[in-house]
Image (spheres, rainbow, N blue to C red):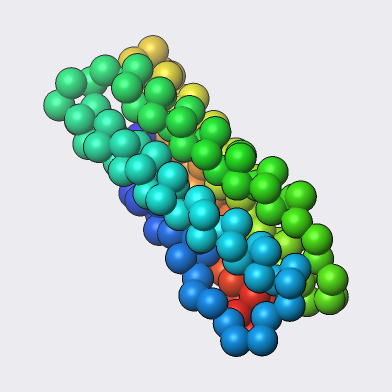
Amino acid sequence: MTHSRRYVVVCCLTVFAVALAGPVAGASASKASIKAALRSYSGKIAVAEGHTLTAAGEYKTTHNAAPVEEAITTSIAVLGALRTKIAAQSAGTRSVKVAKRKLEKGLEAVIVAYEKLKAAYNEKASSPEAAQAEAEKALVSVKSGRKQLNEATKLLLG
């Protein structure tokens, strides 16, 4: 579980990179609506991820997993709401459809990673080995999610 804070930071930075993608001139309505959804959630994501990072930092001194689990749950809810909002957007061109699908898959992977990280914090006291295994599974999910989110961002910006 020594790498759990790094996983949280990676998740935060990945989501921020997608959420803060700038506008593109001449974007189609579907592309623009997806990008608008990302921008509209950037503040909510920033707050939720900030709370998660703070709670993870405090865990090192307090060893109380409840605030970390609560913060992760909030982050999962925000990311899930963003995923739902993106799913509701239309996607006209092939590249926008591919970008939308990659955004949804990437967000799902990050959500899965957060669930695994939450489980790792929950198991830390009773079984550090199991907690480490859960944290490693979270890293795999983060990498998968980051790849999907980066590819989607390139499609939306290109």
